[in-house]
Length: 340
Image (cartoon, rainbow, N blue to C red; front, side):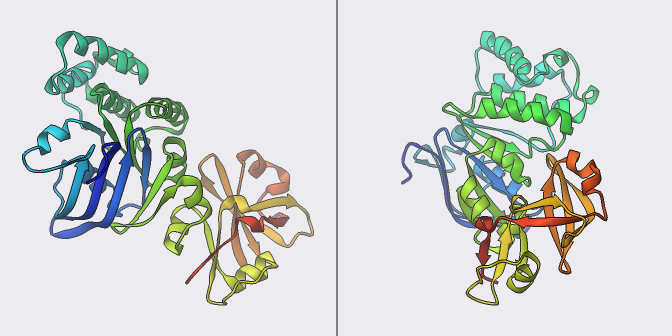
């Protein structure tokens, strides 16, 4: 039996949807006051994970407990009220923004006086109080997402679940809402699960990460540990590491410490590579790719393309223009050896 200080426990879970297995994992635990990010590519089972955890869809096999009590057919509805969820595509009623919050709170049994006060309070905290009398079709995608988030918080859940909370929000607004969400989620009794495909969002909103690939949990741990020590090639690539064969890595990066096996692969984050302008450098910038908070410079080095994260300012400088030669400095302390 899970401890009462565990907000959510899932054990030996299997979930099928439309006749297909979409989830299969041994265990997942969410502590009181903890924020966990579920990261994975599209189709990895992230949304199904959230729906199963929130008791909105049944699991084919396994056991789910809320705060130490096993979920059953008889108590499922009562425990479902302990959580709230904000979906990637906000589902809002064709009523005013404030009525969307009030109706949800009324269904949860809030007192009338509290409903009026708290509804406007949460709209203000999410920066959309000016939209209180508007209807969903009058809102932008980002505004609908903020309203959905305000409604989820207004229900005062013990467990908050967010499905890709930044998808419909433009990059300028994303910075402010990520700061707001961080402050609302952290530092209290609220437990939360954030589903995302972007590791940078996980860093902002969570302290622990679960890596989900094809419905299986491949790695769980503190975000720092997973970022620095991915356990597989799939995890390494998902979190943005570059993965090279040991021979090509040694030839291009001139790694001094040999691996124990020629079959091993070498993984390292963008931050392991830095560039220095040098007309006689070994590396040549071939192109740029967009990235969170800047750009990725692709450098050809000994016939291998190596990505390096740099700021947009450096990307636009003469020293780092496409075609320029550079020195490539590799921080070998960030290297991870992986079995092929």
